[in-house]
Image 1 (cartoon, rainbow, N blue to C red):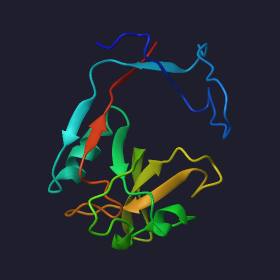
Image 2 (image 1 turned 135 degrees about the vertical axis):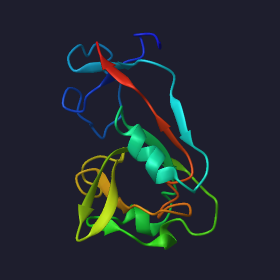
Image 3 (image 1 turned 90 degrees about the vertical axis):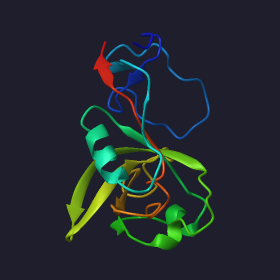
Length: 152
């Protein structure tokens, strides 16, 4: 079990503010802590979707993406389904959190929370098409980590 000193507040209790400054470490409501070490879900591109979906049953799934492309940076809405977002570079340079899945216009997607504030994407989120093979649209299918959370 992880120490209770490691705490994670819900976004509703500690909303994102795009500014420099000190973090509020005295949040006491809607606070969770990891109940065990982070689970490394997958390290290959085959079968990662099933592993991620299973991981989402117990908590968020943290993944790496390639975020230095104009495709990622310019995302505003809809389901991103452009494989040029990742390309063939093997570069991952940003961590994001898969918080769920959905279907839009018949296309299954990962719902991903970014850390760039609510003015980016769809109020701070991006929908990326779920692929069954390869690195994923923006490289998100190569490695994922899951954190089990419990209320304090």
